[in-house]
Image 1 (cartoon, rainbow, N blue to C red):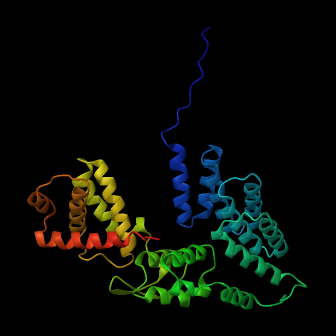
Image 2: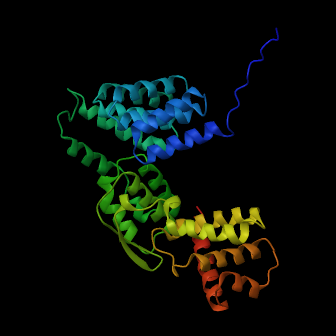
Image 3: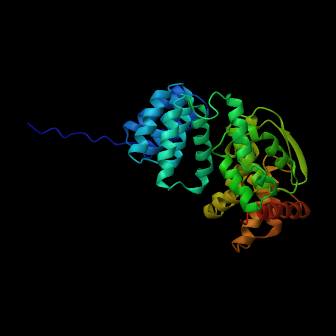
Amino acid sequence: MKNKQRKKVVEFPNLKQRLLEKAMNTMKEKKFSEALALFEQARENEYAYAEVELGMIVCYMELGQLAEAKNRCKKMLREDIGDYFHILQIYITILIQLKEYGEVKNTIEAILEEDKIPSQYAQNFYQLLEFARKMLPGQDGAGESMAEVQEDDHHAFPIEQLHNGSLQKQYEIIQQLKNMHIRPYLPEIEAFLQDEGKHPVLKTFLLHMLKEQGVDSEITLHKLGEAATVVPKDLPSGEEDPFLNDVILVLEDTVNCENPILFESLKELLVRIHTVQFPIPFNPASPEKWAAGLHQVGNELYGIHSDEEDLLAMYHLSAIEMKDIISQIRKLEDFSFLHL
């Protein structure tokens, strides 16, 4: 009797990666129960453990299962999985939602004693420690309302440096705001967005933060000589912008098949200038014209010889239109570097 050979299970290529990407996209769509089930599958496949665990924690938080989220955070911290201080911030956020202020105080004090906190996290941890102390019974300031405590923290944070600090200092303040509840600072942030002299990329960073924190009030901004009024939570992210994707589709047809390396470089350049422009619409609103300008700029950058007449014919635009688009691309490209 012949020995039966055990059949090998062959996985589809990149199955684990695609499963994780699907879980992340589902979570972005706020389908947290469905995303949690997908993360569970990814976990069983032992893929990207830190990302999977963090995704599950976020889902548990959004589903109101704070005790489970807390325990999983604690495990990640204990086993030093993922970005320690990022996980620690999430853990403290959960403790505050559970009103476990004593644990917040003890955890942060223990970390401060080690004197190893990266500078970008220090300010926020000190504020959270002060908040926890005020919320504990018998402490100075105990019994203050949440609004009063937030007002104290608001005065403690050097938000004025967002307006009068150097470009480097403005960038640092924005990085600190990323890890904070920013609604108390909305007046200062809107003033920054309305100041035509402030760097357009920093304004984009702030708008993305407002979107992430679900700010649903109208915000007015001035950028690149234009004004716009937007509701941050309704703004598209970069990958969701139809115009951006339309330009990429044109470049796929005209560049990708002949020069994939140039195509990838042009996509990167497009994303950079989009970061500068956001959320102001591109003018002219023609994906073909912007693709043409990017193609020409890419050819010049890489020393690729191309016949200008052929390029103009390919994209159906005039030499004057090409010149105008290239001028705009170079202006936006210059802004895309912060020069800190």
